[in-house]
Image (cartoon, rainbow, N blue to C red):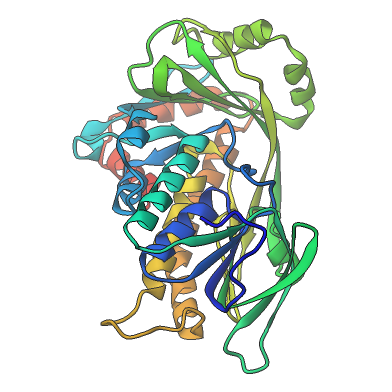
Length: 406
């Protein structure tokens, strides 16, 4: 990748605004198809808002897609923890639904990996591709997008940005916004979004459980919101505890030992307690959906198009399917050159994403609202439904298919 103050100012095929997890994977994927790609990332050099200390759960389909892109090497595999089983429970009530490898054709349900390990995998793949002469991604950082406009002849888009304190313009045939839920590109063109506030905040950290996790992931529904306990490498777990906004200040102020005790009690001692907690981070939760994914020579994808609740861990997996489908839509036909900003191709991409969005967003939203009801007897009903669902194999197989996005 290019990290210098001077850069190639000639016309690019594609400019991506946002060089985090989604933009980074997308740039690598498009470069493999021969596109000349420039990434504009606003964070300081060597940093990114998404390549942080958090861990991400990749479905097995997403893991296989990573492999198809050449991002799974020995180091990446060592940095990941396989999910052998998922247990869905309701805190304080009976009932459980178990999903195992048997519901997924005998293979792991997914992999849990650190966001920084994903960044390292992309960096290694880029270096390897440079050695093999496959091509490079020009990454400008810190570069802050300010504006863009379609050229007078309609054949390109001019992108204005600030890079190392100076204003620059770079032309490309397609602009892609992958700059997160509060996208500056989306705001600049005043694309309307639908926003629903859950009134919840996720508190995220990792910890060491007293008992081995054996690759089991838990989704534990509580009165304030779901608690996800994900198996992580080195015997650790990732803890994502969703709470009502009004309770977050108190929980963030607790000493680590007191916070761990509160978690263990809520989790009903299933792993014997937690120690060695990393610093907690709080993330307010909203559902953000964009109705128009494409514009003239523009695609908006990833969290800029859909920011989901973390329940069921679908956010980044949905983003990867954006990457997969856009890469396929822009691929050349029978070796013939293709205009990446062709409106017909962009419209086809947008239409193909609609059903996946509807399924995945609908699933997560229903889970949040259904399991957050704090009504008399609601917990008993949820527990009964979980027990009932556990015995229905077609239902569980369908749930696996939904979460895999197939």
